[in-house]
Length: 213
Length: 391
Ligand code: SF4
Ligand code: SF4
Image (cartoon, rainbow over all chains, first blue to last red; front, side, top):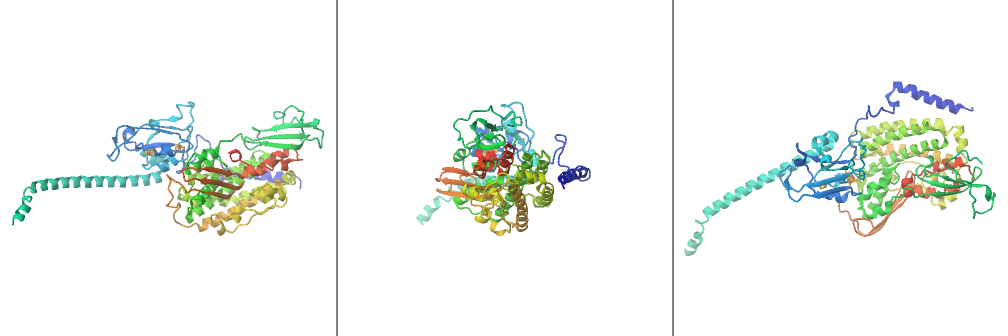
């Protein structure tokens, strides 16, 4: 019959229109920005630098090894390494970035910097409404704007962050144990050396005495 | 001459000097420049069309507007560094691009892929095929003038698949998911259940689509016998993918090469017999049904295990000197990467064999003798993405 295609089409439209009042599945649009979809955990937008503790300058995990700068495909990271060293979260003296800029107008959100960083210092953010009217300054993020706390990281990627935190805690415990062991070993060595130094004068002549026997 | 239909695109009638004067007198020919910003060209693509009245006498595709030097850039990047760029080739199906590139590098360096990763690749690859074809049928309807609604129906379906991609890879379109020797991350919790839910809705969408459109007499009248590609031309011009199969060429690299683990799945390769726009549309719908079958089997058999070969390094990857060509059946056709390594961290030569570009080369043969409005749907049925054509 001529025109039954049109009738079928209208029936389908009507079904979806009235169905949308009954079933949530048929409603496929939401009223952004008032309404938002729940954040997907694996989502990624642009990188940020993780810091531990309260002070971002003190707690930055980045040790300025510049691996991410080298591996970033469009080369949008710029790092200037410090001349001096600062104690990191474990207390080990490390270099730190005096300058760490990411040009997010060039960054393509590929996550390769995150994959190559051996210190879990750089992670992907999930923020997506980032538009700005400042073409240059607004899109060139310096280290202060890049620095976000570990709590923020835990909030946006809970599963991944928990694993990273556990690994870091283990590493820190190991480092601490090693440091303690080293310290105690050093202390022991020192006391032994001292003891030896004290004891030495006495046994030292012994061979001579033995020889003479 | 109906110049009123395309007021902005019509150039002043030109004297076309050195034209072959066979056929209609050259005085009456009209040269029309469609694109590069034409709403029907699926990207920045231009066609110089010579018309006799409404009929196409000659057609010259002009591309290169989206050229970004992909191959040369890849030669100065590390092997891994090019992976995110391959997402941007055919941006409708990033995961199959990743796959083809990973396959080429794995061939070059002799890397083994663990079983679970192979399954994951098949799953995301077939999901990509589903959403690419859903996209294509929607766009084709749009080109035919069913404005909006069918495209939105198709996009609603595609959006669900993109949500799955985002939950797995972190991005809807720029997935950057495959790694040499496996995949980047494992499935998050609940992903398979969500996928099953999405896939359950797919047959309903396809049924609805077929009921409403495929059997529609207006659509049949509009597409049957238009843009016929003969089997001989398809073979001699190197056409691949659904476009070749719509002309009856039984050539599917999943069956021919059996790359990955495709020999473990039972699926059929649908073939067309006329090679017109209708067949090309129909092939996509049938392929979606076959992909659903493959997905069911792959998700049922998905084994546990590692997802990446532990021996491959992320940094400092240097394959030994040699060359390799890896190809897969991408949703648009044969997608291949040709690599030459000289032992340094970046490829000495990097070449993409894009299916869209090669399928586009026969556009003039398909359009000759048809009306201006048919060019639009013929181009739509070829299924191009300009990111891949121009690279
Ligand atoms: S972010 Fe990571 S890879 Fe980059 S310089 Fe800092 S520590 Fe090194
Ligand atoms: S996400 Fe990719 S492009 Fe952006 S800074 Fe990291 S490596 Fe560079």
